[in-house]
Amino acid sequence: MTQTATLDAYGELIEPLTLKIQRLLPGPIDRVWAYLTESELRRQWLAAGAMEVKAGAPFTFTWRNNELSDPPGRTPEGFSAEHSLESRIIDLVPGRKLVIAWNQGEVSFDLEPAGDKVLLTIIHRRLPDATQLLNVSAGWHAHLDVLATKLGGKPQTASFWDGWTRLKAEYAKRLPAA
Image (tube, rainbow, N blue to C red; front, side, top):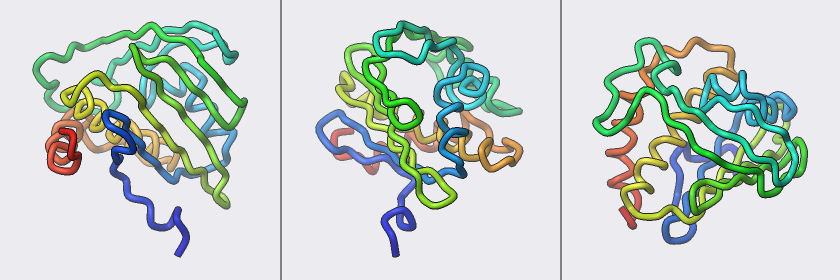
């Protein structure tokens, strides 16, 4: 059995307050890269925001999670219908790696071919505290569920927020720092 055949959909702590999550996605790699870098495609699973794909380029992510599923489910307390984050590209290898600033931390997206699939590895470094770790862990997991559904050509039938709420409770049990 290969490593990619045994992937767990859940993220793991690889350092204190650093989450690593992997997902085996339908390829090809250029298509997955487009879903990371093109605003119209990225908004369908994560956040909108035009991005000049070059190191140092600033951009803004804008989340509208209520648009990711129909129905969206119940929005958790403390979350708004829209949220934005000012960011910039720290590093990239076109088609393979994208590293972005995320508040005081950073997020790296690495793509590796795996036959007709693509292994996406996300590492979110330097989360500020355990509360944010839980929110981000559930968030990346829920957003990757949406991405996998989109890339698989299936309709999004699961409620985004209901899934996020369930995942947050599961991550609270799974992650030792939480």
